[in-house]
Length: 198
Image (cartoon, rainbow, N blue to C red; front, side):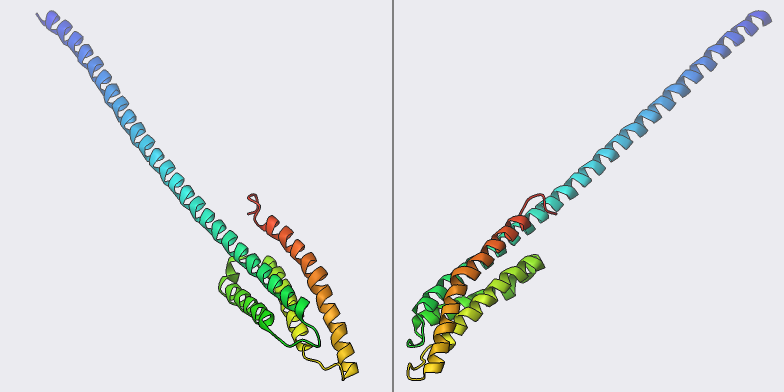
């Protein structure tokens, strides 16, 4: 009996030890699988957060770019309007003419450009804004220069001759210098609005 009992004890001891090892291995495996599942979920949550952050950044950048385009268009539109009204005035001005509605329209266009640019200049790259503003200042100078030489009497020959020469310079500036400067601005705008520009 002792021998049977020892044999059964050895057998069941070995059996239970083997079962214990298997159970410990199974529990360990389930623990590793649980940790792996938690790590996977956490990784996916991090990826999702990063994706949302990236998307939010892209949306903000896109809105900023759209606003910059809107402001640049507004500045350029007002510059062209200023040039158009300025041409109307400069072409009709001269020493024997008085200031009229064309000067009022040109002055209004200048004022609109100044107001718009003051409110929106921070949306535009400084170099581009300075370039646009430089052309606007040249236009303003040309328009007011032409206005200064209106209403000069031909009896005052020296002043009349000076006014005629200044009027010719105004016409030349508005026909040549301003359009050339506008072409440079157009190139600068194209460069500023390229999608690959960061």
